[in-house]
Length: 444
Image 1 (cartoon, one colour):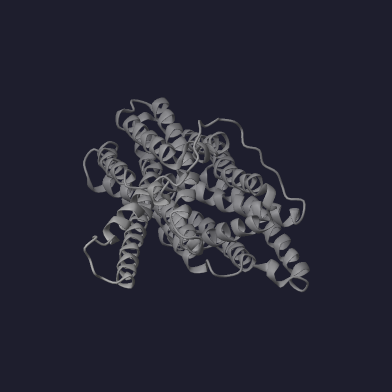
Image 2 (image 1 turned 60 degrees about the vertical axis):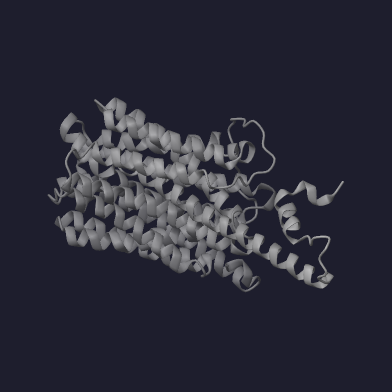
């Protein structure tokens, strides 16, 4: 059998480069012609993969954008349906529960069924949740929409990140990670900003933005058709609970990294769920664009920070981030005490830098400490800590605010997060001191 017959693209190149029988051209000329044709074909393939890479980044960002569209609209829903702040936290909590369920139960589905089918399901779930938001008649239906939105985000996050990595050469793995981070956090920030602008300056604040978003999802679905499948051996996916474990070596530092990530995601959850409510009730800032802009600010600054610090030592990044985290907490508490929007926005910027640095540094630490044979299980444990931080403190603040008020509940959470932050900072610094002299590479 001709070995080139198994590759139609290579066969086309061979046909183009095969000389006619009557040709008197020397063999070296035809070799050069073949090399040129082959190089042109390789360039076309590389161009197609680059295009697919950026199309997938758009699909990723568009999906994540939809998950935060409801954030600045909660105050409108609250006024319309007369529910308490604790219900706002419940709405957010069920979203995070949907993300966790997708990560734990379907985390390996794209390895089995392929990336594109899971990405298509994530887009479909996002579209379904958007339709639910458009026609939601009460808070119960809104909760159902948020669960579906969480499932969409959970399916998209791991699958798109893996596919982006597979669409580039191994030498460009860092670029794929940075683009995945920017698409994820950037999309989350843009969703709140866009919805805030629509709510403030466009009619039908709880429906028009979702109708427009459906058009964005349609464009993303078209773009997904041009993304190649990167999984060669596919099978029927099996839904089962993905296990996780803690590494034996460096367990203390791993736990400290998880605690740091828990604190960072707690602050992100607080902003995503309650920042618009606090701006309206405590600081009397009723502009929905400002409320959505505050959420965008912490995500946007966090994304930009991760791009800036990606080349630095993970320990140095997480230690610097934890120090800034304490400063950001202090500014936010002071802003709530003085009802100062300007101080609140300044605290948001500092907190955004801190969250971006803490998340990137702690994730790099977890990856470094995870044993190769159980890396997936260890990293799963890290992300469970992240998403528990996204849910538990926010629910606690929402419930506590009904008894002790908004400011005191945020103050209590800030104290707890500060203690957790100091624990993580001292544990990681102590680990760095122990290992730096004996193994300088371990600090990276």
